[in-house]
Image 1 (spheres, rainbow, N blue to C red):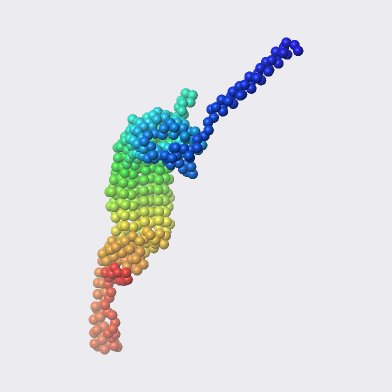
Image 2: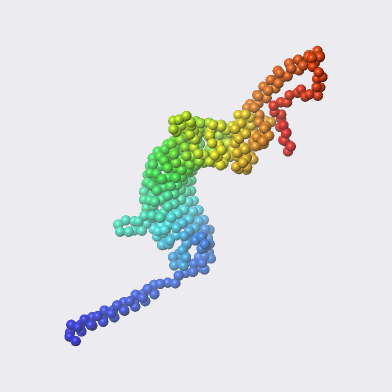
Amino acid sequence: MNLVTSTILVVTIFCIVITKVAGQSETTTAAAVTKEKTNVKESALCKKCICNLDTSLLDCSEKLGQWLSAEEWEILTNGDYEFKTIKLEHNNLTSVAILPKYSVENLYLAYNQIADIADAAFQNLTELSTLDLSHNKLTAKALRPDVFKGRYSENAFEALKNMKSLNLGNNEIHSLDADLFEHIPYLEELILCSNTFQVIDKLTETAISGLTSLKTLDISYLEIEDLPTTVLHGPRDLDDLIASGNLFRQLPEALKYAKNLERLVLDENPIASLEGDNVFPPMTSLRYLRMSYMPYLFKIGTGALSELQNLTELILSDNKVLNEIDELALSKNVTGGRYLDYPPLEHVYLKNCNLTTLPTPLLVRWDKLKTLDLRFNPWSCDTSNDHLINILIQQINKTNPLLANDVLCATPSELKDVTVLRVSNEHLAAGSSGSLIWVGLLVVLLIAIPTILGAYVMKRRGCFGLFNRNENGASRALYNRTSFNEDFHI
């Protein structure tokens, strides 16, 4: 064996030995690093909190004096089970530090005293989809853009791309940083309700209009009088807008940019009437409209809802002074032909208003309604409401009998508190103003008196045979005062 061959053999053997030693070293190191998984269900954490493995819920609400300890986080991060939803509500937490890496998807921190959040507090929660920070002490100063920044990668911070829902309601926020959502650009639901905004300033407008994926926006109870015209221009896919409890006296002009809006809630706003220039703009995607508990709304005028031609559900309940809905409030001549067009309404709620009559031309296909709630209104039970009395109440009774029970007459006094259904079934409806009763009586008298006198004269002259003395010559009044006992008769 020559020198070269010997050298190669030695080197080969040395390499084999080194490889085996390295492999054994790696195996030993890996074995040393690998830790036995913690039995989460039997852990001290699950004795303190509610651990529901079936729903993947860890609920520590009202169970903590402070944040989870390092040992409790260790149970979670090294556990044999990963919770998708964690609730830490009602615990008087005052701040949020950078949270450990965990695959939680829904984190609820509501009803605490949180006033401060660390930068990148949620960067390790890469699967986080829903974050609830409502009912805390957060201010505009505490909500910095860096609060939501993700992990640092190369030359930039990654976005929390899975974050879809953020609830900031019931805090002390009066404005939003223009770049607040730069690290959570795919947000689909934003709840800002019950904060002290009073006005949507330019910074807040910029922040909201930059959320191009937004589908639900709750801006209720912000004490605002109007919306910036372009605030809804950016979120083109906005489906739901909740703007209850504000100070709108006119419909916001910004609604004309909500082209794809499907649901709109405007409860508890001081709008007095919908007529003239204060009517809805074209909103061809809108299917659900709710305007209830409006303290001053008294009239829905001509064309007020005519641009909502795909509306399927209309809720105008609990408007205590609403006494007029124009018969042309919903109709529109879309094609320019002879006939008017109407939205395909399926559910209409007019409960607890001040309506006395319901105009028949308001809709053409009343029979297409699946729900019609007319309860607790002071209905007139005379010929002015013939369609309601003879057709609609029977339709309501057939489709949903419970909604027919409290549809009551307020006038005339003879029918006060009698159900419209009973009036319909027993044909009790009075004339439109009660005047028909007197006209009827007058006609009877004008005809009956000459007839009786003539008959009497003829009888005296013997022109007739025996006069039927038992014939009842008195004419009944068109309607008698109602008896309200169980055997109801006229």
